[in-house]
Image 1 (cartoon, rainbow, N blue to C red):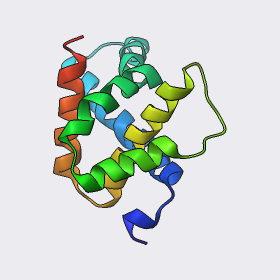
Image 2 (cartoon, rainbow, N blue to C red):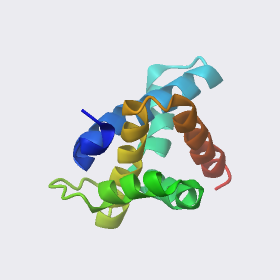
Image 3 (cartoon, rainbow, N blue to C red):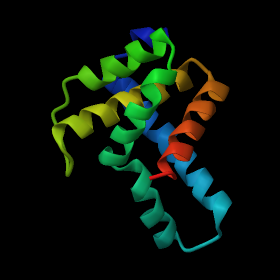
Image 4 (cartoon, rainbow, N blue to C red):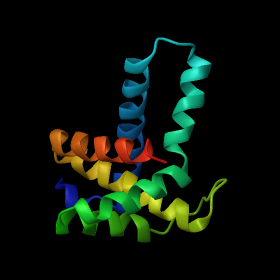
Amino acid sequence: MKPEEYSPLVLAYMGDAVFELYIRSMLVGRANTSVNELHRRARAYVSAGAQAKMYHRLIDQLTDEEQAVLKRGRNAKTHTVRSASVNDYRHATGLEALFGYLYIKREYSRSQWLFDRCINENNED
């Protein structure tokens, strides 16, 4: 199946795992600390609010194809909105869909480059 044929929510499902792996790898690489502390630090990056900020920071650095995936994820009909605003949750879903899409396309270096932009920008807050 081609990456563009997956539903945006399936892409976001995959992207959630990919993004979490990037975060965990980064945090473990920075410090050998307790799992509880790693989890606390990870929450600052994987919350819908944080991912929504990353969405807005990346949008101008994306190709037209990547922007289309991001928007498909953002506009997908989700049934669950946890402790976040609907807009933040939708933008986070878009970001996760993008990372899922890039993973399925095996564009690992592009995915890593975008992740690095997310984190570098996030650290400037």
